[in-house]
Image 1 (cartoon, one colour):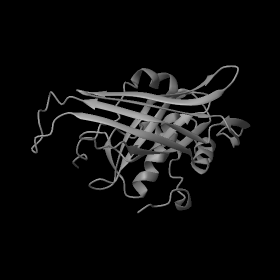
Image 2: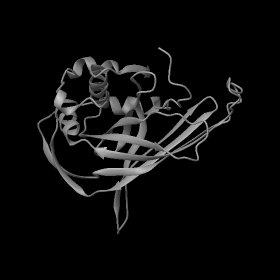
Image 3: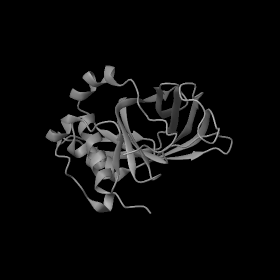
Image 4: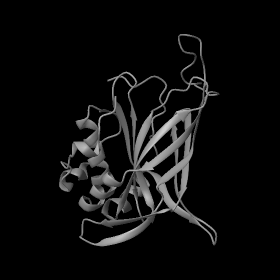
Length: 229
């Protein structure tokens, strides 16, 4: 299956985190992301949306990028981003950040939001806890590629300059299920991947974690994941 033209895959150096994150037990947050490219971008084509799976207590986070260009595809990286809280005596904000590098392509993501919502969750061990979470995260994606390794395209265009706004909205429904059913980041990530595949998305990049088999990922409720045309 050919990948959409000029997409910058979200492939990060996540392996260093996976040993510690695979065995950790945590409550999870799931955000739905939307990207809006800036008009000043040059030769920039990107995934239109994504799902972020992050541990509520902070740490490595997974992202599943989605596109409808040339078909429905998703690109997966497990543990490739960072999720944490930045705080001082005046403000506390949830933060997501990631750096993607592949060949001559580079992209940087950052988004944040105030902890403005209380959320009661019961995890896979049956423990209930109220968390202060950010209902939305807002930020930017910046990307650049001199395309020195590939040369000009057939139409003579060369180089990529990309900028987009990033808006992430808390999916309380998916957050509740991921927290209640899965102990590991791998299991929660695979659950989202299965939902995407159920609604016609095929893998573009990345591999669904092998640990998913033990996590009962066949938890599908069509109401939670509506098809958008």
